[in-house]
Length: 389
Image 1: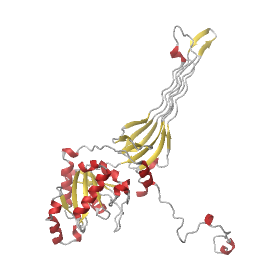
Image 2: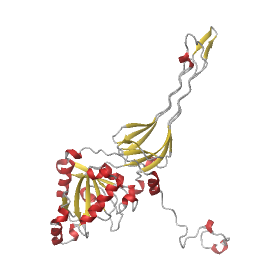
Image 3: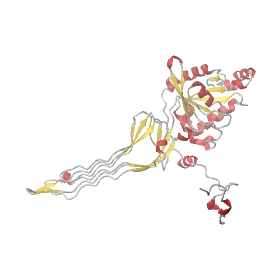
Image 4: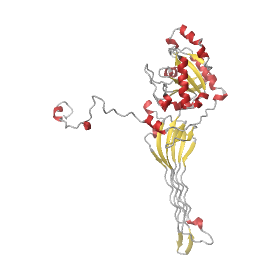
């Protein structure tokens, strides 16, 4: 599943050019002076984005680097219109944001199912000479060319749509919590960066109500500068209405960890600080009751001025209280509308993060045939099975 989750693609798009108008003078056996009858050219096809709620990744666009609409047809005689070019519709998941591939400027976003956004408009067809006839110019011998095509390199980024986003350092218990409160099955292990892609889960609440929770890969100090997974997944937090910060009870300084996480979000996008925040002290089963009570009475935690819940996903402690706190924040009027301003992106940094790691050609113990200068003596390898039929 993680290999199939693609939230970044860079593609080249081109709309269709308009067809040229026709220059033609009608001639018939019994109509020697029929006059101009050149038809108009067809309209070029447009490149259109359309939201699709059944898609959750940009995988279908990863290997489709060039998307081009067809050109409009030329006009013909007898005022025949050229054929319109076929539009190219790009299906994208809801929550897709489009940036200019060269400058990184924000272009548009697709948030609703079946929402259509014209990314590149097709060129208009040229007028035939029939349109230019006048009393003083009864036989115009010229027509309009079609409008040229538009072309552009764009970056598509998917920012997942969820009500609650989990924010925390690696091994803070985010995946365990998601697996307990929903039917999602994220990978859980005792090593950092177990979660490499965002995971979504539907959390059931009372009276058949529910909300969506997203598990974001772990953030480390310096993530806004490209460390760890860097900016690659911080963009998914922008869509969440409520941010659930998770700090384990085993941490030496929970307040310091919370402020580091908050600082990384501020460095990435200052608007994230306006979102509702809840702090969950996780892994309370890993410490004694005395230590938990000490944390509850901590003045530094109380001074954060945000709701604080003490939970243990493994033991099931505080889960209902956490759901109540999340539901209360989600239903506040100021948290109903998720509106964010998409700042321009640094294309060079984003592309560097998306490049796969290069192979270390100097790695000891690895020999490649085309890297050895001397001639290989293949006779000494005969008889070991690979050269026999």
